[in-house]
Figure 1 (cartoon, one colour):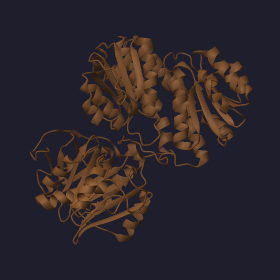
Figure 2 (tube, one colour; figure 1 turned 30 degrees about the horizontal axis):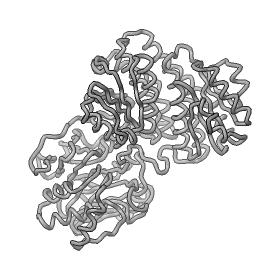
Figure 3 (cartoon, rainbow, N blue to C red; figure 1 turned 120 degrees about the vertical axis):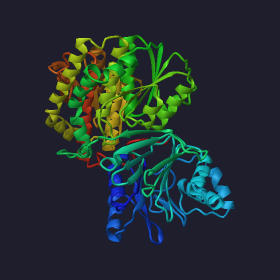
Figure 4 (cartoon, rainbow, N blue to C red; figure 1 turned 180 degrees about the vertical axis):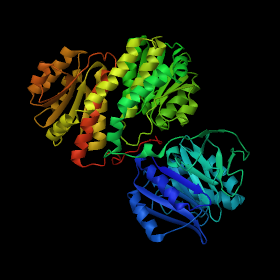
Length: 603
């Protein structure tokens, strides 16, 4: 959600902070700002809207500094305006914040009684005032931050800058935060996302919750120091070297990151095969599949949940294991029955999804084995789980997830096959390779999908339907269209239409039906019910099926031969492209849809 970048170094701080914020635009935001040290003290520039608005102000003011912190805000408390934008500054400190201070309404009266006023509607200003209160009391920045942090409830990350000092301070609880260093140039960084530091920092540090990081380029040999909440040095952090190339965060020849990421899927599938079936990932996959579980609890959010629903079908069909797949935001509050011999499986692209992390913590507290299917190595979910399977999707910039879904589903399939002792089944490798080739074939037919999008994009609503393995794809297709085209779209199990949703069908409603050989007669019957009520029918089904072609207004045929387990992945790619081209016709901001964030780090 909110993006944070901080810099302390011998070079100019403004450029790397702005560049870092630019890389974090994909996370979603509604305002941006930067604070920096000057000879007269702290200065702050901030502006509602796109980062370009802030860059315009910076270009006009031409600030220069060796220390700066920047922020892109995704509003949780207070309107979207210049005042509520971060950083927040007073005569002592400037701070940026990602997360929610849940007890801000309890802390405010105490601060007001002690003479502090509030200029914004944000919860973040509570931290600034409380920090100032403790600093005046203790006259020690480190102690003041620790004492302030101890009083807060909720998941948050903060980066702080003190007037007249080169240090930037960072601390977090259940929110993403990293520090980085370039030892050669003696430049140090803090950020909410390691991708902001690609090309800047050679070594990346992942502090644990409640670890205070002090980053100061003037502290030669100790540019980054770590302290616990008892104000003692600590080693509760992990370090890794980043070897990500800069070009992975560029669109290349594609108009949007989303389109680029859709087109990356065939290559990523082949790399996944190589990594887990032939390469260094094999041992981790075999280890993850070696333990037997009577029950699996899957918790995830959004697109990752739809992947989890596909995995539920795999585990039940291939492994005969009982599985529950649930919303991360609901699972933890249901008082679920959890037993220590069961598995908790958590799916997340970023590894920082707040609701999913809370579910993992709940399962861990109840002694379950916790597994993750995750994209970001070193993320909070990755660090907290007993076992991790990386989806190897690379950086996904588009807010609407595409390639991550495909990799999550296939990584889960490999886990299921590992648990069944079938990793060496030649049919598995053959099917995955065939799937990659079939997706390539779909990508060569984008003109067909463009034409369909042109015909249907102006209609009032869209109902996606599927049965069996395709029901989660109906949900995912509807979500993708809602996310990027801003149109009303719903996904249903096709058999449920007659139980209410069919009342919506008329000549202005489009039914996008996924009709594959699985439960074919039942799904065809559901499509005919829609057609009888004058609904506009687009069918994604098996190529050469004249029955489907006749009933549909628009038909997209697929070669499903040899895809016994992975048909949902192939049909989903068609819906990804359909959503993309409808959104393009609508003229929306495809890579950064309104109101959305890439990594949802608050509940």
